[in-house]
Each structure stands twice: as structure tokens, then as C-alpha cells.
Length: 399
Image (tube, rainbow, N blue to C red; front, side, top):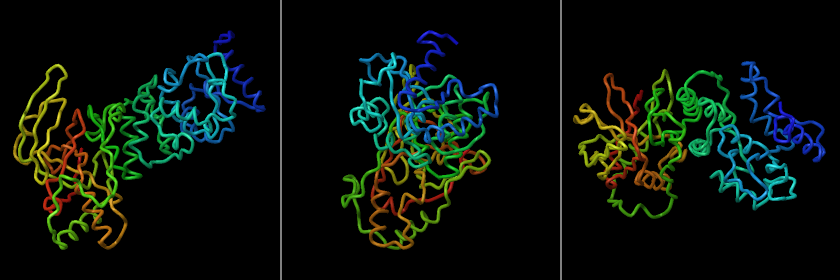
């Protein structure tokens, strides 16, 4: 190691000195305390890293590219994959600049308790302060956690998935040499299998060779999904609610509550869905430079919509009944009430009457389906209350 102030040994010595100045007699550095030549030690370290940072009395971050007058937004530290858990896990953290001065010369003993620092961190990371100060590992709101990592990068492509194991509180084998698509696919399989969270299906871009419902790259999660509408007394303005049949509503409710949980078995995603058969497809335009193809779609029970695809639809997709627009379903989208009371009825109609992120599926032989990737989110909207009440609830096998 170099012994100059900017070299590895100099950095380690200054790190230990700063720790001593805060009255700590022991310090641990991830750059030199893990034997990366030992696969067993590396597997243990990756599986334990989040817990180590969570249990630390203090985490010191050296922003080697930030001068005393710099800001978080320009630092590479906030663009690296592994540093996401280093930011979220600690309860107490201090940022030091290029010359090892406290960031903005703040004298706080914990930058996570400084309101100005938290505002800067929110701006630099896109993560709400409530998660930065009180983060719990697990699979709650999985789509947001993937989005936090979507603009970050790692030296080894597969590491972008491994760096998220602790954030999702998952313990999976680390298989260096596998493709990034495979590593991300294994992570997403585990999230769906353990939580049934279908929000991870909201992405745009290139489909993964691992599975058609997964993206090839984590950057596909940068696009924000359609935000959920609040439960209010007002229905969507474009939805006309005619008097409805209580029998039809109870039947629909029972179909939804009786649906199985989404699960992943033998590379097949079993996905409960509300399905809308595509009845008409019209090519509206193409841009061969992108490339992109814009189609106008008519589907049963939905208002006409336009979608943009990165590839032209094959002839097989243009045949009648070949395509489906589907709304993935999970029983947690409704309350756990066993009976269809007035409140549950209202929530059901409100939920199903809203626009939603749809998946475009192509039917294959043997009653299987394949997702067709899109360049933008496909936002579909039910026609009216009648089309909602006549919703077709099915469980699909997607490969």
C-alpha cells in the first residue's frame, strides 16, 4: 500500500485516528478486513454486511472526491451499489471530506440527526429522510428499494444484485461469474416467493433472458410507477358508475379474495390477474433510430390506449386473442375483511376503477404466456362500472 496521505495505508491510518478522536479503541474497514480470495469468507461478509453496519457504534464515510466546499450530489460514493446499505444500515454516521474534515464543518456527532444534512441526502439519493434515519431491512415496498439502487453501479455487474441482499433481508448464494441478469433474476424470484409483492413487475426497458417478467437491468426501475390514488369519496372523474348488481360484486370480490398468492416455481411465474383480451392492434408510428414502435390498442373492458414497444410485434401477436392486457393481483390490495361490507365494497370499486399499470402478454402453446417488454409504462383505464363488474379473474402461467 502507498503510505502517502491519499494512499490506502494513509487513508486507513487517518480513519483509525478519526475513530480514536471519537473515543473508539477498535475500528473495522471493509476495504482491508475481508479476504476476497476466500469464497467462504466473502459469502459470509456479503450475507452479514448489513447487520455489521447496523450494529456499528459509528460509521465513518470518507468522501475522497469532495472538497470542503463540495456537496453530496457530486460524490461517486452515492453512485456506487455497495454504499447504499452503508448509508441505510447505520444508526449513527459521519461524513468526512477529501482532507478528512467533517462535512460542512458540522460538529454534530451524528449527521443523521442534522436536518440540513438530511435534506442534502434526500436530494442526492432520492430517498426519503424517514428511510435514511429509521430503515428496516425486509421486503416492504420492494419497488422503491429497487428504485433506490437503479442509478447505482458496481465494478462487477452481478454485484448490483448481491449488494441488495441485506437491504431485503435475504440470504442467497453468491455466485460470482453468473450474469447480472441471472443474479437480479434470483433476487426478484426470492422477493416474489417470500412476499408476493407484484410491484417489482412495474418496470420498462429490456426483458431479462432469466424470465420475461423481469428486467435485464436494474436501471429499468428508474421510471416511477403509477402512484396509488388515495381512498376518497370521489371516484375517478372519467368513470361513470351506474347502478350495479350486488350479486356480481360479491362474485367478483370472492374471485379476487380466493385468488392464490403470486409464486415462482420452476422458472414459471404463477400470477393471479384481471385479464383484458386485446381485440384490436394498430401500428401508429415507428422510429427506427430508437428503435420504437407505437401501437393503438383496444382491449375488452378498457378505454383505448397507446403503447410504445422497443420491438415490432410479430405476426403471431397480431392474431385475434393472441394478446392480453393484464392487471396483476395480490389479495393485500384489498382489506382482509371476510365479508363484503359497505366499506370494503366502496374500496373495491374505487381500487378497480382507477388507472393501473398493465402487463402486455402474448399467449404461447400449452396455456402459457410471455411478457412483451415496453419502452414506457402501460397505463390502462377501465371503461366504466359495468366493465369493472364483469372483470375476468384468472391465474396465468408466465415464462
